[in-house]
Length: 147
Image 1 (cartoon, rainbow, N blue to C red):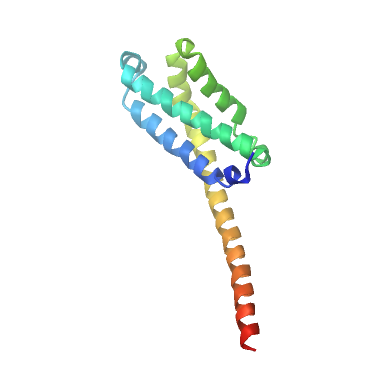
Image 2 (cartoon, one colour):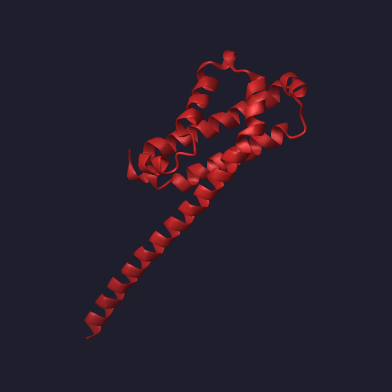
């Protein structure tokens, strides 16, 4: 996998957070009967779950070491859910997905939010370190030419 993709981990984590927020907002005021009767909301929620699964897969394949550091996130299970929705869409149990969305998603959101914050801070610190080195080199060259 390319290094470029690994550098996008904070973006992928944000995609997961955004998709969680969208999915939960779609069903916030609905019971299971209302959800089952609303094909548009079903499609929107299932699409959000696909985005979550695809972003999780990007993370686990682009940066397996990163994914391994956080075994509390079920990366494989999340991607498996995405595959089930995409490939076995007639077999999706809407009641189970609604239950999963309401019970497991808050825990996932909290964990992913913490990871996203850590990675953004980590990338920022590394960028600052690179800038310091570049500044030192440039100023050294500048002073060398003056001297």
